[in-house]
Length: 327
Length: 243
Image (cartoon, rainbow over all chains, first blue to last red):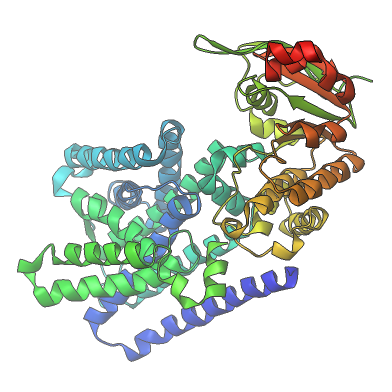
């Protein structure tokens, strides 16, 4: 039985490697910049959702405020770059670190809250963060920050001519978030998180320090999301509070995981692969007047999923697979 | 040798309600001790105090020579206190083996070792065939056994069993009794709360009867069941005279 389990873990890893290799080859066949743009966003949201899934899926602490960490990653990187000339690569790590510390600082009071109260607290805090940045003069307030772009450079992680470097970075980030999840899933932390989600009192009686495991999940989750935010800022070359810290990001991190299968290894990737292209395409076909139509699409999807497949799309793949996914 | 577990003058008040008043009990190493008493006697409260769910209002709790009065549940588990819950609290979205691995991780942080340990415990408790089933798919008697398995995986010195034999069919209860004996024979001290006297009395070495939050009687099961005070507590005055 032990062998059976190890085989399943290995199979997941092989599937991931094959998918990543195929994705890496995709730009050879897709030359259309618009489609490439969608691919970048899809990979980025897959990575973000995978990171969100660590705290909200595995550990069961539903956050609808992860836009805060996304924005912190973006702002840290760009403030360090424009004000102090620190390269985005370092800014990215600094942003991740700051986000992780803030996540733990917020977790300290909020992890005592249960269920809906926790969710509400995360929404409120992210909104406060947004307001602070909108009024923070030094950080550009509502005007935001324009990143000076002077030609293509890996050192400064900025590219004007091609989207491909961004594509490969997004792919790498997605692989990283997936691999971290895969690795944590079969670790003490992974087991602790799932135990905390299912029944904190029982977990505590089995030696699980519930509070610490929530803190750990929050830190890892926030770090990865902030790295995603740093990437997004470089990708846009311009940030303002609404465009990196708006509520829609919190939603777009949660939805792929919910659609694909919350608390599962493959759910976020699967969900993002369906949801993000669909959103982008609806948005462009319906055009400027259709702002909000994508939200109707999300809403409908979520209602359908929660009625018909509460475990998400991964539960369709096969019964044994579904079992593996919930393990 | 000192007792494995001792409560010294433990009180627990919830507002105006006194759930435990001045409870001093001790459990020796290798014993099976039954904690019995009518509904509302304060058994579950005492149990939770020993497991560390909440600290007592007054008094102290000693485990293995150490004062654990203010230690939270997780730390008591690390010291060697394992428990089950009266209302089963399985990790429903996890498989049976994964439920047990959570317990095994207290002593083994290497996953492979924890997994092997968990399989051993499943074999010991007769759940090995159900290892890969989701906990939510187990029948009630199996869920009870999973509670025991999970607690055993933490390698406790003291196992607290909260009504694990209640509500089972006679056959299931007999299997349960056999399991408790097996646990004791493996060198683990057992303190069990039970309702069903016929099942507990032949099983335990010693019985402690709680009534209205106080220790009423304690001693050999045969003496305890004949004690007029116990009969009175369970059945009322009229029956006590007849005994």
